[in-house]
Length: 530
Image (tube, rainbow, N blue to C red; front, side):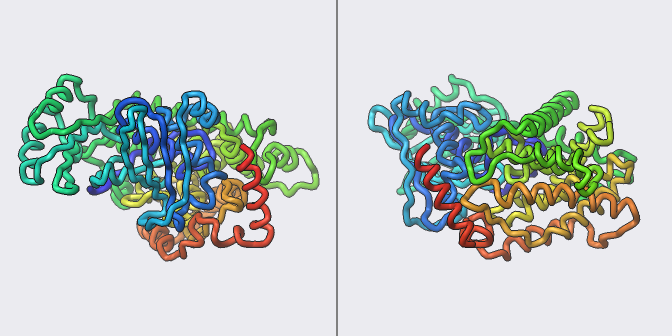
């Protein structure tokens, strides 16, 4: 099934989550939340298996993937602060959850196999993929191929029909529901699974009627987890940077206005609802930075919080090199990442590994400039819509494309917003984004000890600086020459060319230095004790 056009609040500034990782904390929580709905009755036992050669193996403990899965399997969402107490809560509820490494093919880097058992001995098997930036996909349910990403109300109808007869039944059922959001049929061992996808909640009466139909063996119902629902019939004002700039020139609208129009089309929400949601995004980002700058957080890893100390040094010590606006942007970027490592509430922007760029480069700079609250929100729409046109059919995921698509890509989005705050044109915003992305092509992902700390925090600080530098260069007259669409295509193409060892597996880069390996052993001991 073709991937839907991205949503600003699903894919660029979202989801809201408990840190530290979008792919390895938030994604697992969403997978668990969706999977547990497929099991009738009360969950008693679960086994989560990771592929031996997959991306989870060396970092699922350090990035709190295990806590994420447990949180979701208990029926909780990734932004729920109770994720931090998931293990204790599962034990209290009498739910036994085990994590194992098995030798099955890693057809995608973040694959996992879940086996769930209820109190009556009923078992459900689910294969899943954490696809990047907190997005997920259920790939298989009890042997039947599926494509469940958490943006629909999903009706799963198991039948003893062959596929041809199942097609007839699906056509009949479709006529009783308001809209088709990508209905599908899959087969396994001579039986069929009809998957009806709906934007709105389905009535109990409909579900009961389906359960009582001849040849229907079981019906399961899954509610969504994404903020913005599926909208496959949406008509978009643009999808590429070139189309966006053409719209800006034709209408005279600024990029923040085009971002509003795009998300209204994608979500189906009103202007006021889209604006209000973005206000919540900005408030969450500012809160995460300011909280961590206090320095009284426990990062439970290989380093201690230093953002507040860095801010104090660069702003007050006469020996510090004056960085101007970066005196605010850099500490804010660091602070958000430190807060995320301490399992604070942060925004994927567009991923957990780049959560500090937008708060640092965009909001930190905006605070330094003294702009209004309204201008901050508008700047975040500019940031987001640039992220939309850059991504197209690709997810921002270090496991797929390296660190260049996390803090690197975020620096491009932020550079565009800074140009807006400086009074630049939509074209200049896209030029600044292209310039910033050109600067980071090929950046690898090598999280030491499997944590989102080193070099993630310093790369967020560097990327905030990259955004400021690129914005100033373009406003000063520099032309990066390569259009944003072509630079973005290069970004994802280069990512595919990186060896798997350099794409968030802990098998390359700084991870395999003697110091990196020693830090990993020390972290393993800490993780084993929790």
